[in-house]
Image (cartoon, rainbow, N blue to C red; front, side, top):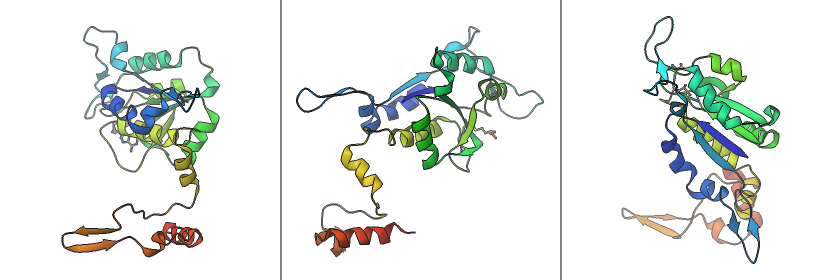
Length: 226
Ligand code: SAH
């Protein structure tokens, strides 16, 4: 899977996508012996500012019809998307526009992206949003990460990349992905067995210490139910 993020603040996002599991998924790894694990995904950033034609690299302007704030101009965003798509087969590319009014993003949506597409272009807005002609021209789907308004589409873009990446085969270690498929528990514990904090003792539930796997599984199932 290749992610292409259109953002005025690539440096804010890069830190996140190059760390931990997402970072590892973008590298070829030497496994045991001569085994080499290929890249599972790539993340590239395109800044509309680099595609602005005037010498001040202006990317926003006042809204037609009046109103507060500024609107991101269409052309720099369109050019950035063009660069991201290159000569790719449009059928395999999904273009998403981050918007608080869009389709609600969830786990099923993340799975669908992995199975249907090779490339996902994520357009992140700032200010009051992006000139609506971008959506029309690109036949982009507006996607929301929740019913609240953020100052920009960067966190939504990262949320989507993170959730989708976990669905790509091989991104999570076998163990972690198995854990994901199993009845996962809402509660989890690690050492120490007895935690002392502010003069009180907090114990790990006894069932987890007993080694009775059927009982542990039953307990986890019960915990996972809301
Ligand atoms: N006045 C605008 C809000 C713009 S918020 C409106 O009513 O739509 C600025 C940018 O942040 C948006 O263009 C969008 O890309 C992003 N954004 C904010 N909240 C979001 C959310 N819940 N989900 C996805 N993107 C969001």
